[in-house]
Every structure is written in C-alpha cells, then in structure tokens.
Length: 411
Image (cartoon, rainbow, N blue to C red; front, side):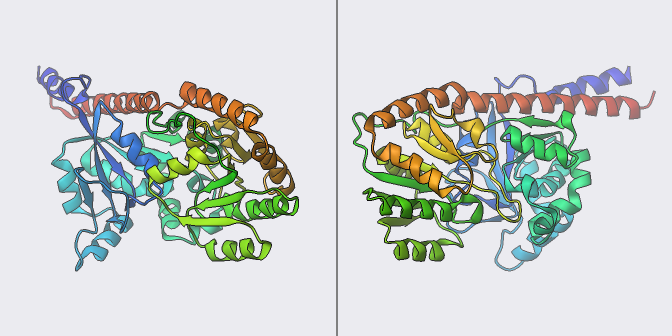
C-alpha cells in the first residue's frame, strides 16, 4: 500500500502534460551569452513547451541582450564573484545559483558545448533533473594536448568519465561530430544528431533585391574559418581583373594580420566587426555569394555545422564552402552551394568568380537553397524535435526516480 502511494506521488513529476503549464529548461553556457551564440538564443526563444532560464558561470560583457528573461550566474558580485565562479567550475559548488534555479522548478538542464558539460552535470544533479549536452564543433574535435591547454578543456578532460555516466543525452550538430564523439568513447545509445534550425521568417529575401558584386564572409577570424585561404582566393580574383568587394563580418585574433594581407594584395575589402543579426541579414541580402572556406586547424579545431550556411541559403544567397566537417550535410553540392577542397584557394577563387559573373546562377542556386533549408532546417520543426527529446528524457528520469523510491520504500 505504501509503495502505491509513493508511485502516485512521484508519478506527478513525470510532466507528461506540457499543454497545461510549460516546464522550465535551464540553458547553461559558461558565458551568458556571448555574441556568437545567437543560435542558442534563437532556439530557446522558439520553444513552446518549455520556458528557458539562462544559467552560467558568468554574464559576458556586451553579450546578447536577454532583457525580460531569467538569467542566473555563479559570478554574481564584484567582490566574491570570481571566487564563486571558480568554486562552481572546479567543484560544482554554487548554493546560491542552485537555490535560484530550484525556485524555477526546472525539468531539465541543457548545456551547450561539451566543455560546459561537467558544470551542467553539477547543476543537473543538485536539481535532480536530466542533463543534455550539445557538442558544436571544437569541443569534439580538438586534440588532447590543445584541449588540455585551456581551463575549459581541462574541465572536460577531468570530468569526462562522470559526464558520460551522468548525462542523459549527448547531441551532435552533425553526423561528423557524432562520429568524433563515438571515437572518443561516448556511448552510442546516448549520442543523437540534432541540427540547428533557422527562422525562415527572420531570414527571408527581400523582393527584387539587387545583388552587388560582393563576396561575404561571416565568422570569427581564427584558423579553422579559413580566412587566409579566402584572402589568397580574393587576391587571385583581383589579379584576374574581376571587380568585386570582399566584406568581412566578424572579429578575432587574426584580424590585424588578415587586414595587412588584404592591404598588401590590394584587395577592395571592408571589415565590419561583429554585427547585430539585422545588419548581417542586410549583407546577406545584397551579396552575390557567401564564402565559408573552413579548414581543420593545426590543433584539430573543426567546425560543427556553421549556422551561416543555413542563414545564407534561407536568404537565397549561394554559398561556396569546403568539404569539411559537417558542411556537406548542410548544403546540396552543385545545387545550393559549391564545395571545394579545404585550403585550395585556386578552386575557391574559380568557384566564387562564377557567381560574381552570373546573376542567373545566383538566382538558381539561391532559390534551391531556400527550398532546401525550408525542407530540412526550419526552426520550429527543429525546436519541436528538441522539445521531444526533452520530454523523453524527463519521463525516463521520472520513471527512474519512481523505481528508486519503490526499492527504498519500507514494506
């Protein structure tokens, strides 16, 4: 009789009826939220069956606006904040953060980036909810020595065993990333592929938009993005007498040297720095082609599935990219994009030139790209799948709690 009562009480916590009241999902990143994390914010904002609460080690300065949203961080004061952040990331100790999140009655914790997984696990255990960890790229591909050289990498290396045992699900943003996780010992039954989605209403081409002779790059100026290869290709286009402007949106440690290379080669270029999404869309709407010349960096750093691929195609802007990581999974080669070998600036220049010189090709690839993204990467559909994963794990977690309570209940 007592066992039946335990079951009836705990059964209420399975949270099957999400239509009555949305559950809370804790969205965890170490930094809340860096400017490049627009894909995390867009997916959280699009949820219908869950309400997002953002959590992290600290709030990043000049990060994405989160006005009106619940945000909780371990580093929450100028006096003791750094010590609290260290204690949380090193030992998972953050009673104030846990208490604040517990007050939101969360149903699940979703940590973005594998390096945030151990901290996410510490939260999930103290909140007694399942943990999902999404791997986006470098977190699954960096070689061991490079990963060990950073604090975040050491966190993952040190906590990997517990993470594998304790996390309910690992999400890879591409099949390529999934394969890398399996190679590293993550259990196949816990690893799923779930790709990011694009809001097709936000990324929609303007009527009768006039395409300019512009090659657009959007991303961080780091080795894996292949910006140097793009500059070499741009120099070849200039030498061939092709008139165009190279637009470089973003920033990073290589910016100064890239700017010097562009000046030396006499390339007509513009550096914009990081831009709000509205301004990025404006550049996408007018460029002839987007270059995504990604490569594998010397330390193994690789892409997952770059969001700019999907945003470009949704805007009916063709793409020239590389056979790298998950990129081939996000385009249709020779239909929505053209793919070249990583590091091949000659092939990159040749492909870019065909778009700069052919409005008809831009139009054909652009329309095909829009259809492809609409059929496979719509934000609402992808978020719905993600919420389905949440619900599945919450139900499994609730059943596990029931089983545990039934075993421990007196008879």
